[in-house]
Length: 126
Image 1 (cartoon, rainbow, N blue to C red):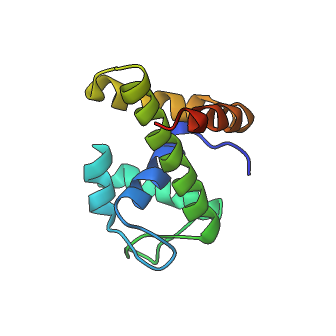
Image 2 (image 1 turned 135 degrees about the horizontal axis):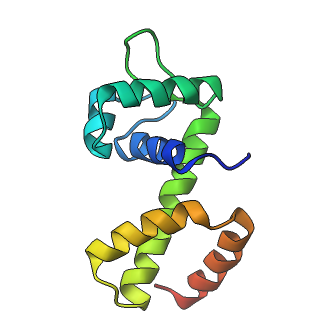
């Protein structure tokens, strides 16, 4: 799948973090709170994710993810967790800064580079 904007990746990741799946829905107000954005911003982003076939939302209803949207969201969340663990455990970076930097890095690294880095880090057994 082609790489999406950081913003759209953040929305998918937030929906997964809030427990959203292909079956379990989340409320747009909860997504707005999690990301610190307006409900209007959530509605605009979800409309775009719907166009890409990654999310579903009936008119003014709750948000669910398609299979592809859920897989993408989980992959971003997995990247985040691995980057955060590496920054805090291997490098000793304070958690608050590691959280911010992991969020930046998860969007910037290519899939190929991440796969190679991930394989290397898993050998470190963090």
